[in-house]
Image 1: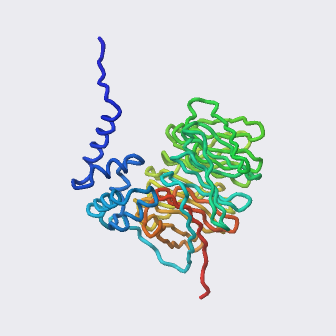
Image 2 (image 1 turned 90 degrees about the vertical axis):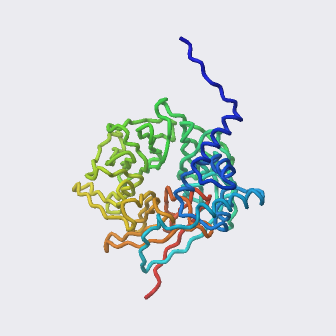
Image 3 (image 1 turned 30 degrees about the vertical axis):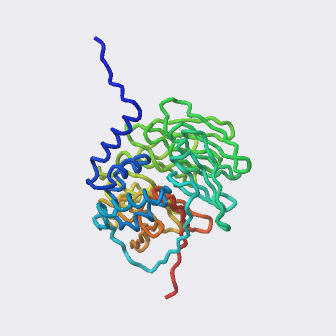
Length: 409
């Protein structure tokens, strides 16, 4: 028996998709236009799950993403302002305290790229990836000048990390490669995954021997690139669908990995790559990212249960603290600087930056701004050489540097 397939012309398919998307939006003038424009880059969930804005603030937000003709912009922002006005159903619980922040912000040159994961290079420059548009970018923080480097089409880079010589290694999340960018020439060397099942390099970190460790979330693997030889070794995790996500290297050269797919962490021997799973007690747990304190404690964000956790490798003790905004706060990025734990509550609007003092067991938190509005998600956080925090808001193409101070009493 032969099955006949209905072939939909590309233009008709586009109209069908737009119509389907529009049905999820409230009726009104501008509905179809919002559906067509916004769904060309992302689905409707960021609109539906936002904290809502006035027409003026929707205009501010949209201008961080795309440039539109004035008439189109007026129609779209008018519709959004009417049907998605300000509300506080996802407002974070902000905790006051003595620490003050100063945030320096850059908007990257090419809009719509989903800029993310800033990191400082040895020369003090700040780098980011534009995940949706195959870009690696550089900021000179002294002058504010920026340069964008095009990557191979389809790379969809997920993060970027410098080596000791200032070469930038990015993770080709969609073309199954690790890329090495020479900033002086713009030349790129690609290291393809040796296994066709290893499809999605995700986050990477260098060890002290210039070996680049990395996770592959959907492929359930952890890899290590020998930058001297180009050889890549891969280890499949013994827990199915662990979804390895964040990764950090300890002072012994061992790797620690977060499980975004379930209640576990993994410890990898730095030489043999032998993996040991640490099962976490709360079955609602899934861990986006982790970091390692100077005393060797492994801190992690329990994204699934809205908690901050700590694992002691010496004793096996596990402790967790509820995040200020509760179980739906979805902690995401994480960093430890000078003994202080920093993370964000990505489930809230605005996205809240949280400071936790382990000694006093106290929290303080702030809303993360994006050009006067609150939108976007902080997905990865690294420290500058002076201890500043490097953060971003991926939905609004903002790269930020956060200076921390405590005023004299």
